[in-house]
Length: 339
Image 1 (cartoon, rainbow, N blue to C red):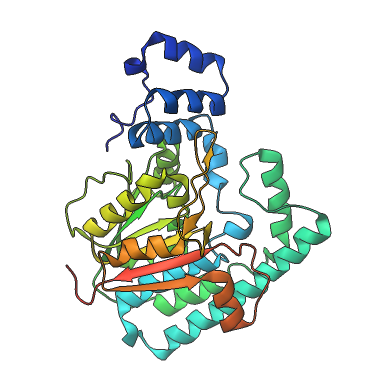
Image 2: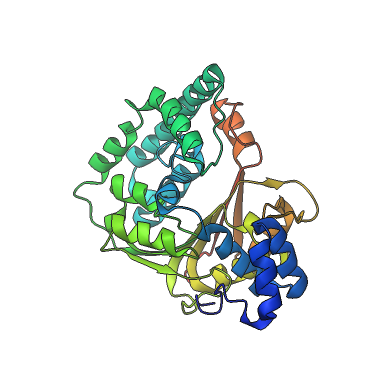
């Protein structure tokens, strides 16, 4: 759905609704609007509205510091590795596979350093937009500042001079180019025809300022303007938990419709539960998603779905049991041949 359809206008609800919204706080106003006009259109308006008051400078740092720093965030690293495999194929070489394994071990080491520094300084590392809290997280991040670019430099060196057919990528809820920053830093971007989509116009302004030659557009993941099978890979991180429950399958269907080869999704709040838990939070959602239901929704469109429970996977593969989020999962759905 376009920005016009997802606008903030309350014209249909009448002047009485507008006056009530002005008097109420965001959470109470959201309750009023849901009562007036329930459904995905209102939910999308509320989601956009919930970010409208956030300062652009705060959004530019949101989800790129602390645990979410894409240089050391395991889910961000896995996305880069999945893209690299598809650009260069599994035959990209043992050197690439060794570098991937080494980078994940490196990320675990730096995550542990952050955890210990967070504990030592009694500084919670969460997804804050408050400037004072973000400043404290940046201070904690200083403990890894002299090392965090190590694999950026190693990947840039490894990819320098290579040639490959460019792969088209559509990222939903791209933020202020949160993960694309690492695509560019690590030398992956030249191999991608990338489009970033986000509902928040401030994120799009931030992203375009950082990367004026890259295509970023405002839009909703619930109704993509892209044609069927028009891109190779669709990405989305930490998006589906913030949608109304009915929107989860809708976004998966839209992403699957647009993707020729694969859909790669990361989650921050997933569990082995039979059904999704709907948790409206102020003007949007903070749901807990069912692994089985999301996997089934992807399997309806793709013959292969790989499911990675990040905490258990890191413990099994790298012996690390202190991951910051035990509810984090990543799923990769793919076709044997492009659609």
